[in-house]
Image (cartoon, rainbow over all chains, first blue to last red):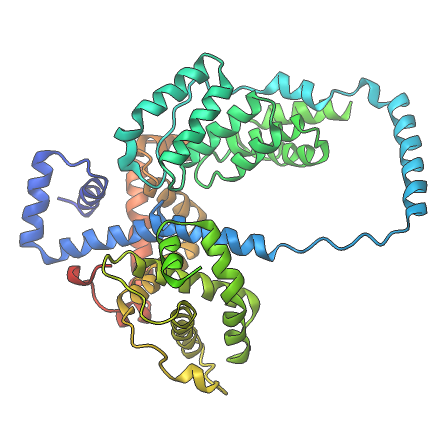
Length: 251
Length: 193
């Protein structure tokens, strides 16, 4: 057995997907080879330290609390009211002129969103911190998928919330990706942005693309433009579409 | 909140409990770090996070009972970790008295060492190339090699397997070459937290 095959065996042992013959092999190796047990332990430790383990979920929560507490407090507004009124009038007039001469023909964020939004056809996702919960969660996942396919997004969202309550460990990136799409289907871009923000693994191209679309729906055109500019300069599959959106935003 | 409800809150990943602990005890940790070795606020935050992780690991033991106050044990854990950070960086000068004396008899060395080993994994994982980090992250999150290959644009699942193995080997080589790894207690199933 090569070292790589040995590593595969250890991974399968950890994931609980060994066949009966492989289980016997692991037992034999544990008896005969003292380094094998050490390798089993090392893998588990690596998974606990770096994977979607309980301890990492806890660490993530602690980080969240620290970050929330460290957010700078908004300074009290000390700009005089008269200045604000004058600025508002200037802004109002400027926006009116801009609208009259140019922007009337530009594509709106929501139009562009509707033109490019291409959500997944199925609501399928893995469990995050607790892959062993798969069997227990199969039923509720089926319900989520049924509601999603049937266009009942409110119900799908409600079931996803129930899922989080029943399996409160850290949710997988798949889950957050799907949650983002459900929110977009419901016209809730801010919630979708929060869900996409929670994706930590994978979705290298899909995450920024859908994040940009959510910003369009939220009419946050400047932030959306910056994201689509990055995408259009990358080598990902959404490069051309991002360039189209940028052109439409310029019109 | 009493000390038992705090431990229970940690066990259950209760955000409100962590918020409470942060609000109550972080200033104490910040003070410890600033007065000893002129540490910074981000260093105090890391120390607080690691200290809480040790308590969390300790709280997983079924027979764990806190005999001293919560603030004492948290301070003691952070004190030990900060002392070892200072030693590592050769910055042991002008330490306050309380930093140099043990405050509690509670044994949490196993949890402390486990947390330190996790830290080594995290530290060296950050030093791997982005490509290696991405492969290992996906694999550790349970993605199949076929999907890893598709996601990262590899020619085949076989190549993804090779890459995964070489990245894992590289990570383990880096960790094992660190003197801290040798200092930590060797693996013993009977001492598992």
